[in-house]
Image (cartoon, rainbow, N blue to C red; front, top):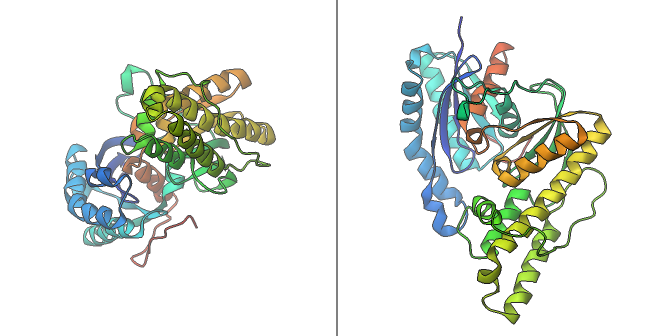
Length: 343
């Protein structure tokens, strides 16, 4: 008998709903919020209001696209955290009411765990006609990297995830966005830097890199180094950024990726794990994807990179995490509350 899981994601500024038939993706609908672009970052109050406007049409579209009815659903999985509390409340409140009305179970999902489990979603039609790579086998190592988080996770099972390294200050994705803002590039800055970096020289400029023992990361020093370097160069030439934009983007991107890759290599050596995955918004970065594949060839890793649609916040990963829990009978309750930081 097939299991149909509705996933709801509303942790930040994307309202998303997805339907899985067992582990097969039937639909994955995402509504973004352009309102934040002019502010150069997500405004929490505006985000929660936009979620209220988007959530019903997005869920309706996901169910219709899946070619099922709401009565076919087996459970509703939702993002409980971490994230913006106002945004999370919109998704949680709808999930509770929807599940109660249908008399089906609720499933609470951790957003960061779900990013990792996105690797287990099967696609009915693989992108670009290339057969989908089988999911990694437990245990595996995962670099989870986004605007708010940078972690190295030893994944023992679908819920047994051990954080063996994490940023002690800023996240890699935040560093991309901050660097873009310094250069006057539009928000979100990460994709813009990725695009411009393809035309630049990654060795043109060098920036200070952290010396953090163990497997933890640090990006605050790099951010400061970028800020001071550009400030000083602008004093010499007001057109410095415009003249060197592609080289700046390439050099900044190379610095961030170098910091990430060194820790991944260290983690693989320390654990003996040869299956290495990446997850989170920054996993969409083309240079990071290539660097991981190159490192895989060099070190003999089996590298797992998610399809682009699963890199940013999406409900397919929430539904996948929900499917794992559904099979074990691990259901939530109407008393569930959101959390801003990882438990």
